[in-house]
Image 1 (cartoon, rainbow, N blue to C red):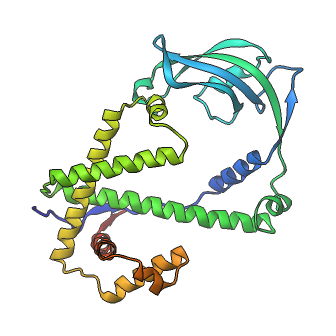
Image 2 (tube, one colour):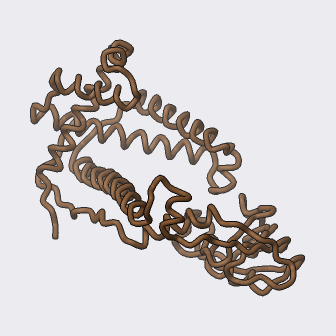
Image 3 (cartoon, rainbow, N blue to C red):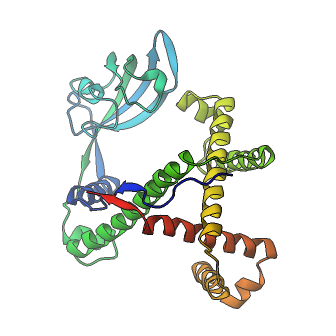
Length: 314
């Protein structure tokens, strides 16, 4: 392979600041989860009500895959559905059957529905009023391990900061590796590609099963078919192979090696994460697993080398 430039890559420092509104959102979600609901049957729906809906969505005269539901509890004003839908439910009474026409945004996750008019056939079957407990110190004591709301907010802030940092690091490393790959010539072994793509596809199926979702249901919801999903996994596998190839090449060129102490430290950290004794944990690892851990440490060192030599833009 031909390794391109990997020093002096340009990037912007990621912003991992946690906004107070993000903390408020976490608390409000917890407030909603623990609300008490009361049935309403003597008035039309209002914003703030929980409307129980049966609906069927159609576009261009055809049912939308995954666009049907029964007894769906929708909090009016939560912005869960596409803009205009929840406002159109308000004013209707229990038992009403009606249509709602909305236009999906240009950045909607399903490309086939972007900027399309969708017609929902809706049946309002019930109304509830959620009653929320005030978010204060008592709320914190009731629904968290903290004695005060201030302490809970600080804990949420720390957790969100960790998520932001991880997400920003992953995004930044992908962007930097994309720059290196674009400047390199990286062959992809076909057999390795097929094996990795199959592993990724199997992991995808396992994740679906773990989420209690079938492949057929996923395809209906996303508008994808099995061939498209497999093609996505193959593209993902190709990119992983290119990323690892350039990182290995950088590690070799810069003589980045993993010491026995570093390997032992990583295995000890993994053991601690599993709640195992380090020596017992290490004895359970096979040669291939240990080699894999060492290889990942070397890739991490190469990535850190790239980051150490980045030219940060203001």
